[in-house]
Image (cartoon, rainbow, N blue to C red; front, side, top):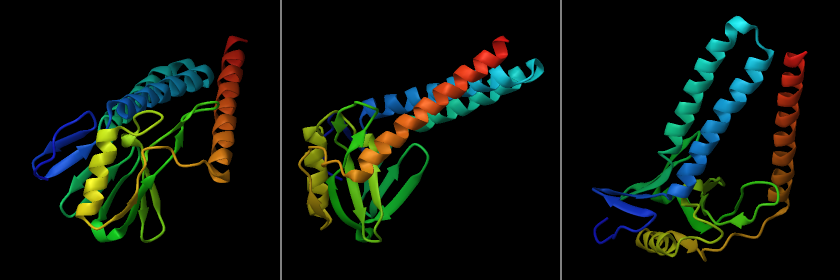
Length: 198
């Protein structure tokens, strides 16, 4: 990992380089705060009064865990492979397991723009979207350039442009399902508050 200079999203450290942007980590922390609020709102509205402190404590613990996990999001590059730290899962891949680095796509919400993230295509057919590389509508030039050099160094095919991949039918379906899920949660919270107020 010698010769790697630090930039906004690429931080060398010893025998590894961590690729992560604080925007992605902040959004994960925001999700953690949201989990805490939703947990508290739903359960405190429908639970017996004596249980509310238990639900607040458990909800706060879950929220804090998600916030701390979000602070660890990243793509850790080592000589023997990469580690992809997502919000709920960590995946370790050796270089022979990786078929290609390519442009990925993440849509953050209904009506939101499409944003670039790194997509790792594995030889076993898995595709990993590395949310920690999220920087905005286009990829951070320093991050994209670093990922190109890593791919060349380890003989991994790459087709990185730094622009979001074209959305397919599956991503449009996911966007619709996500919107439906958020609406359902909102309805449950409103009904719970209504029942509590009666």
